[in-house]
Image 1 (cartoon, rainbow, N blue to C red):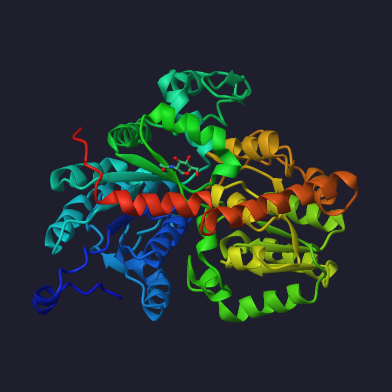
Image 2 (cartoon, helix red, strand yellow; image 1 turned 90 degrees about the vertical axis):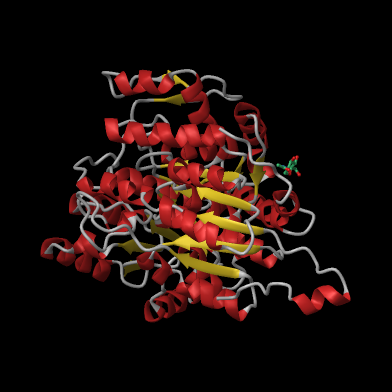
Length: 505
Ligand SMILES: *[C@@H]1O[C@H](CO)[C@@H](O)[C@H](O)[C@H]1NC(C)=O
């Protein structure tokens, strides 16, 4: 832990002490896709001279140890604050502290109930600090339980929203115009609704609509988060002006508060070690196998296939992906989760596929450092579930994508990259695959093969797509460099954080 030294009495005799650095307390949601960008944010703040405290729990803290150690070696004021995980929450087995540990969907709401109980320990921690922090930044989904804590201590509070600004704007507009209720009540799953108040035409169906009102308990949680969003002092989003300028402007207007665009936050990681340690402890052996395999391939040669940390595909869904990749004829690097190939038939099938595609394809099992892979010159395409981090990591590295949204904000993230940015080939998914045991097979292997070939096989259209993707990659890097829009937004945020006066209710 690299703690900032408090000014000593002796120092004050000689000259007035420098003002203490701005201190940001960051409260990520305990899900990989939410935590990773906020860890990047903490690192960036510390690199820019602020102090950053990442609030977490023991299981999640263990995963972040590598990040903390790296920061300490670099002498950065980044620390982990581990709050004890609330015990004895109804319906939650002990040991589960992260969304990705859940294997029974009935444990999801209890996990969120447990998080609410962190309000007390968070307040104790904040009250115990020598000085009041400058600012609290909590995940949009933690808004409900952190708002009261920030208010009672008089600390300004920003919310961090993980998806594209385009999605977040759709969500606010849908709420403001009552669209959520209409889509939730739709009898026909494919009935189309226009999202009101958008600067471009956006259509959604019940399955692709923003918000998560699938049950009364989720609706209650969603309402609390919406309320906390309305009472926050501003928003932090992981995007950049050149990518989403018009939606950022509209989002600021719709919220009536500042929106800080600080991304792509993944570019805070400049070396492979930082890229590999940001989300989880990397498997060093597997990583070196992957790197050696990629090193032997041509530039822009391989399509990377990974569907994010949450989705667990059933064997019949894996089958469509695998045969699609095989049939595309393109070199591929495919990430399969251990749980997905637990059944002996699934394992045997996959091993046979590996044998048939040996040399051309590599299948890795378990968690991989995606960012390090995407930054490798051999990766020329990405088949993704359209989680915003994945899309943005791809954009930041100039890699064009095949889009296959699975659930939640992913369908609207897809609309942004398809309709507005035009750097993708959609696989053509119109219905979701949920996280647990969803029997739906929305995309047959023929569509996978067609989309992957279209992206990877060359030709005028593919070349133009690749050129555009590289252009966005360059703009992303420029945004994060001195003088760039995200860099300057961060400067502004640090400078103004001490001066923001927390609004009451
Ligand atoms: C972020 O940067 C953009 C462009 O440089 C600027 O227009 C905007 O006002 C900045 N946002 C905030 C909240 O300062």
